[in-house]
Image (cartoon, rainbow, N blue to C red; front, side, top):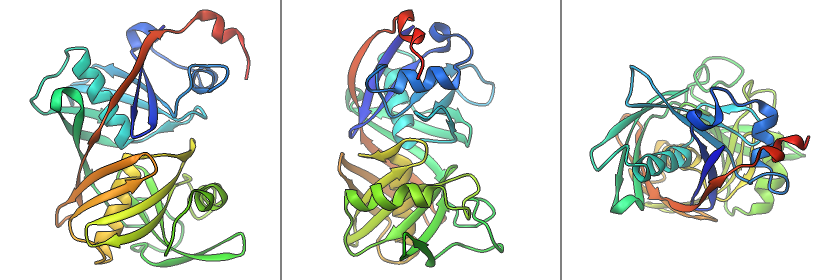
Amino acid sequence: MEFFKYHALGNDYIVLAPADAGSQLTPSQIRLICHRNYGVGSDGILFGPFETSKCDFALRIFNPDGSEAEKSGNGLRIFSRYLWDRGMVHERPFTILTAAGKVTSRVGREGKKVTVEMGRVSFKSRQIPVQGPSREVINEAIVVDGQELCFCAATIGNPHCVVLRDEVTPEQAQKWGPLIEKDPRFPNRTNVQFMKILDRGNIQIEIWERGAGYTLASGSSSSAAAAVAYRLGLCDPHIAVHMPGGKIEITLSRDFSISMSGPVTKIAEGTISDEMFSWET
């Protein structure tokens, strides 16, 4: 099984082509491949491309716990770079179909920078989803481990909970993130961002990713957090999102459509041994 490994600001993914891996990956295979001791190690798997009549390419995205993600901003940038490296795309924009719908991507700077039109952010509870009456989920309270936090919820094809803080730390994300992810008000679980407003054009976030855990960077998390900052009137439409792994540039339109730009770095390519799958996690 041939694999390609990339990272986007420290958020690393393995790309597997169906032609090499077969038409299906089991949850146990996914968990083993992503395991950092018994497998290759990654924050997820990008499984594609698949043929589709709706877009130029189709992609499935898997979390390291074996669950399937609707969308991943960093994953889409990495997959775009993979297509570039394989000579399947060039400088013209192309479309990718995910479980959350179609996105448009463009690769530049000889593959080093990728821009993805992520779609439109919604704050509506039924679309995210969030339990309770139909509403925009803005500045609501959640009690976590005895601490009352203020949050906004959003979706850009996958669910997000953005917690506003005066200061953000990795410890906050690691302590409160898993509790918020599985809070019953989020029936599909949720990604969690702890956000600090730096100024009108800059925010800082720490991330707990659904199905993956503490993460150095995330494109969809950057998109959701920037959209919340813009929705609350705390930032202008061009926002630099600062994360432990680096910076992503977000541009928002008036209807909360998102354009996301950031770097991608190739790590390695190789072959996964059949012997690896004899180990049971």
